[in-house]
Amino acid sequence: MSAVARQALETVSKAEARAEFSLPAGGKIIMFAGRLTDQKRPLDFLKLAAMRLGNSDETFVLLGDGAMSKACEKAIKDENLTNVIRIPFVKDINRIYRAIDALTVVSEYEGLPLVLVEAVCMGIPVVSTDVGENKRVIEEFDAGFCTAKAGDLKTISAQLDTVLAEGTDAPRPGAARARDDFSIDRMAERYARAGRLTHIKGTA
Image 1: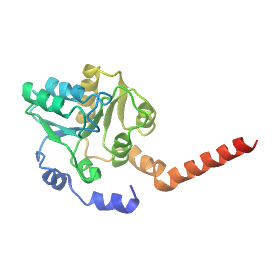
Image 2: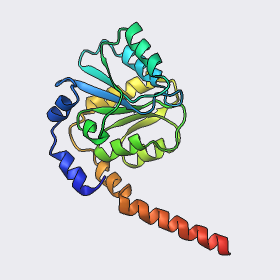
Image 3: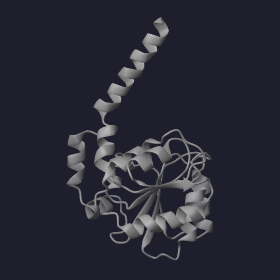
């Protein structure tokens, strides 16, 4: 995200963002964003919502579409998950970040999901399974928790309690550093450096 786009988003209030996506004006909003596939374990996110159904001030947003869409819809209906809102698609995901209080990543495996990077750069706390590069990024930018194994919803729920209790409206200190580290210029430098190293190795 460019600095200009970031500044434009900062003019959008949480209330305005929630109204835009027809989300509750009050309470805490926890989001899953990604393809609805076995790898991403969206049913685990719905199980987490079921575990916390008694928390009347929480809403769980399932953002995404995919092969498990019908299974997710069935689970929402069968478990009467009145605390879940399903959104198959949004045009600009950056805008919905302004509406939420936490992101959860419950994947079985990952490299480094873009949604996690985006949330960290936006200052949204993340609770993730310990897969791929997630832990390195979350710890480097003090962005939340990444210790649970896939399926360990008890740990994820406890860590979610912690990040929500800390409050999510104040800027997280690592967000600005993350935006710099994942900026277009910085990423271009890395690709250029990698290309030069590859060329040197190829001619050695």
